[in-house]
Image (cartoon, rainbow, N blue to C red; front, side, top):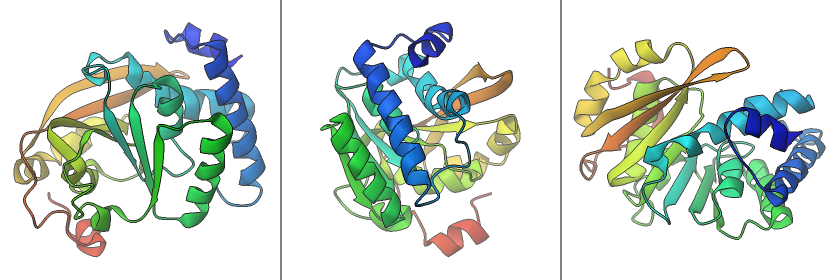
Length: 234
């Protein structure tokens, strides 16, 4: 079924990739009984709302600029979109970050069972890791499906993006309002919205916002988490 659903939405996957995603679903449901990973558990909903939603990005030309790219999934949670993208893009190198160790433990099992050797897992907070040399301005792409306003996400994510790389944000129908509130954040962080791509998911409009990082990030960003949330760059 996974392969059919993907094909119907313009995405071709191999039998092996379908097997990997099927096993991912099984592990997700098994571990969801132990820790809170997702409120969506019905099979078809997981395929559409988690797997397919994560995967649409691979259709974009801006996500295919290099044969080998480095991708950071910030606040990966249960592995969306990072695990799905790692299955679909075996030549890319992925780093998945989450602040909850229990989720990292789950993702370690997924990595082993799906044999995703091109994934690295890190436990930590964005505002701390974003100041470390091994992470700062080091990635071709940073992706996030985090539930936060775009100005907040920009401050968390842009410091990880290399010069002329992209932060890609998954957004819903309020995307334009969030973009309108992001002008100051974009200016301060030396970033620019390069492209907005629309797709449909279960009769709902979804959007991918591609934000290009124009230069190395000023040292004082990201600020501490409390300041980012209480005083966004509006």
